[in-house]
Image (cartoon, rainbow, N blue to C red; front, side, top):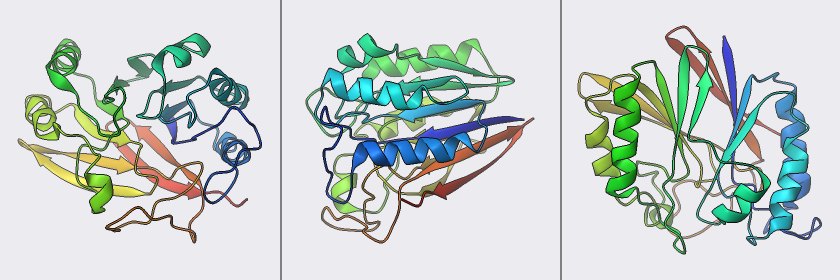
Length: 245
């Protein structure tokens, strides 16, 4: 069995004592990582928006906390991130081995904009990766490739999601897509060709967004969390854990 833990949307500042709307991002990341360590993951993926203020110091804070994990960990950028500053602290990989499976990192970010877009070049790269290897595959991206039911979030989702789904039709090895950006637990089944693909969202380590809202709203009753993804042969089991502060 391979255990993958997803952590997302840390929104850290250079100031370690900075506040978010509902808490303290660095303290909350520390609590989430401490809880995730108890799951004994084989791999951890951080699916974007590591920083809020786009500073080198914010990425160094993340590096210090995530390096307490007792397993390999990887990250990718979100719409709030600065790729160059991230890369200076820790490289962003585009493919991660999960024993008999693999995890492909898909960059959906448009610099300077909140919405996501792949574009033809990134889609072509993904198709090439899938053509070269037919092992069971997970994709991880920051922006969700489906509507999540909140008007304001869907307006800053993945604009060319239809092109992504069309590109995935010939590749039944894609079993699920993990995404960040939405700050909430989420799951949707998408029928594709003769099979189906699951799309999973994850709670943020900082503020949680209120599901089903027309305008921006914080879910003050919810808590930070992470997603666990257990892979055994061709099957998987996934769930969300919440963290008390």
